[in-house]
Every structure is written in structure tokens, then in C-alpha cells.
Image 1: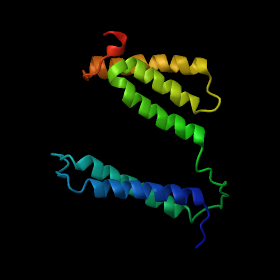
Image 2: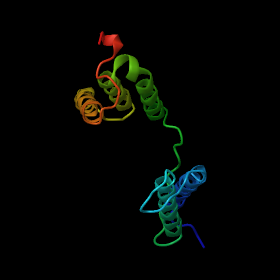
Image 3: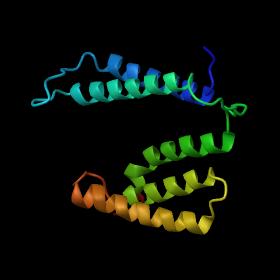
Length: 154
């Protein structure tokens, strides 16, 4: 058998690792039943579904018309730094600065990592997402996070 679609095979392999890893990491949690779900029910079922999807993708890799695979670009430095940096920045800013500034800065830093994403668009998106997150998580769900934190005298 010849692998015809290497992208499908490698993405299936990645999904399989994630799905099986989820199942293994949640095996200590109580599973329960569909009617009375335990804390391990949802992650185990999700891991099983991801693993099933992975197997389908891996089988597809050996069927159909052959596709060429581009050389792998494993390290796109700007995008990786922007995404990881934005997550780190959010975790550092959310308590002292508050939800609204933390989300806004996170969006701006993440936008820096995307090619062709203008700063004007990023600023509008940051404002909309910051206010939307504050409304959803703080106002509606009642999470104990301030809109603006101690850095802003609140």
C-alpha cells in the first residue's frame, strides 16, 4: 500500500495522539453513565471521537488520488512567538489590569503574528472582543474578574 495523501496521514496521527492521550489522562476520573455523567465522561468520549476521526483520516491517506506534500515549515517564528506570547501576556495581565485591557492586549499581540492583518482592524477586533468577553464572562456568568483592575485604580 502506498501513502497517497501524507497530509491526511500526519494530521490523523496527530489527532490519534491527542485522542488517546486524553483517554489515558482521564482514566482515573469517574466515568458514570449517559444519564449521570461523571467528570471523566465528556473528556473520555471526546478523546474517543477524536481517535475515531484520526483513524478515518489515516485510512483516507491510502485511498484516492495522490497529493503532493509541501515541505514542512515547522517553525514560523513570528506566529509562534505571537500566539504563545499573547497567552502569556493574558495570564500576567488579567488580575492586575483586568479583563478588558488583558483581552485587548492579547488580541493585538496575536494579530502581530498574522500576515496581512492591519492594525486598524486589529484595534477594532480587540475592542469588540474585550467588551464582549467582559459582558459574557464577568457580567453574564459572574466570574470573579474585574473589567479594569488595580492598575487602573479600580
